[in-house]
Length: 244
Ligand SMILES: *[C@@H]1O[C@H](CO)[C@@H](O)[C@H](O)[C@H]1NC(C)=O
Image (cartoon, rainbow, N blue to C red):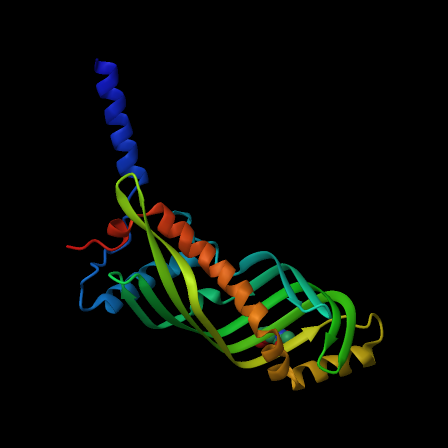
């Protein structure tokens, strides 16, 4: 008998300590008229921790943010694979807008990254605008004023009597102010051709981004939605946004 009570207690204690948001989070109530302010306050609380990651919230180390691999596949004529991607300054984003409508399971987020630097090992093969590319090597890129808008649509589901939400992409829009890219060794040891091709790439970067936009959006949203859905699968809606 005591054994049963004891193990029930233990389960209860374990539950209490593993469930619920980490104690450094300030709870935001879903009907708070100043919900955005509350969320921004939380953002500033967790921002210093983002650099090294926050496992309880599924936030990976953010400076640098390590992405093992990403592939841009555009039709049969172009394929670019990026490995060992290191993204710097991703934790320095500003939250420009955040609207949550939990009654209709709708969220809109507008973020701005003043500066991003992405290094990787690239492997590019195919035709891009006027360029015929077939090369691999280290790549480096600086991106200024990257604006990211995401609209999410939620599908509620029940787990152990609590309501959870799974989010899917409704709209994603990425705008980049300025880009400077360097692909080293695009043509091996032919430095003159390497330099010239990098110049052409940077001069035509707007067109290239436009061409690759759907795949870039796909890569970014897969990453973002993976994080969001892990968070929302762990915490029920009333744990994340209590109603009173
Ligand atoms: C990116 O910015 C850093 C720091 O300012 C600089 O050292 C690097 O050369 C830049 N890379 C490119 C591709 O512009």
